[in-house]
Amino acid sequence: MSDIVRAKGIILSSMPIGDNDNRIVILTAELGKITAIARGSRRQGNHLAGLVRPFLMAEFELFPRRDGYQLSGGTSIDYFEALTSDIDRLYYGFYFLEIADYYGREGIGAKDSLNLLYFTFKALIEAKMPYQLIRRIYEFKSMVHAGEYPDVTGCCKCGDSEPASMYYSSWNQRFICDKCLKGEVRYADAYAVSKDLLYTLRYIAASRTDKLYSFVLSDAVMKELDSWVEKQAKLTMDKRFKSLEVLDGLKVLDKEVLTRE
Image (cartoon, rainbow, N blue to C red; front, side, top):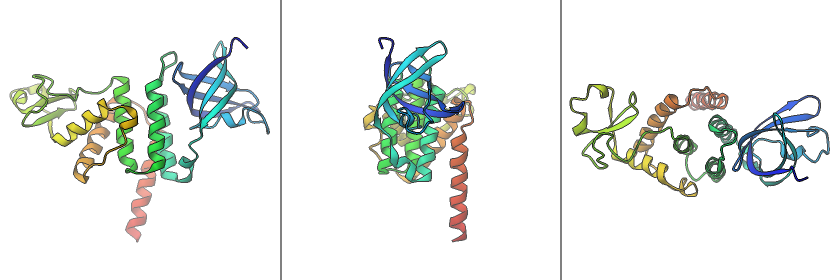
């Protein structure tokens, strides 16, 4: 029993293996992203059956193995059941799990990423803001936690945080003010961004996780944030996310239904 490791985490994915087992991937605060085998979890009445589903947050009890961990038990904290009652909400949730899996690393504690998932799921369930805004906040904050984001505090050249105009270069992944942009051939792709977008990005980057989902945007700023984070995510995350493809398909379907009506 002394070999048992206890870790708080959220299950990112679960896959059946063999006749009765599951392989689960867990994002934990203490151990980072880990893989664990749940022996017998697919048998009816097995004590691990309720501890292998995606989205589950729990205090897991684990035995270290040569190739990962074996799940021995745990105490559930939150199942986030309400995520499964709406298909859009469900696949946004799966998408966020995929991003957490993408950035998760074994042996590197993931307390910030775990808290981000928790409060993002809560925001999805409460539905006080558009899902698309929740998505963009989550994507950008995940980049911030990974250190893969441009400095949003000011111009990359002079440091001015409140210039008359600010521009962004996707090629250089930097913000540059109107004065410093003059004669800079390396920033030929730079395009103007609004002060409202900058303020929004600064708020997301600097805010505590429990304060993230507490604002609304005008349609114009939401459109700008949507476009900017979309481009940045494609530059930063070199992976095709299966759940995102489903979400895009659902949006197309919704548009077709509206057109028919």
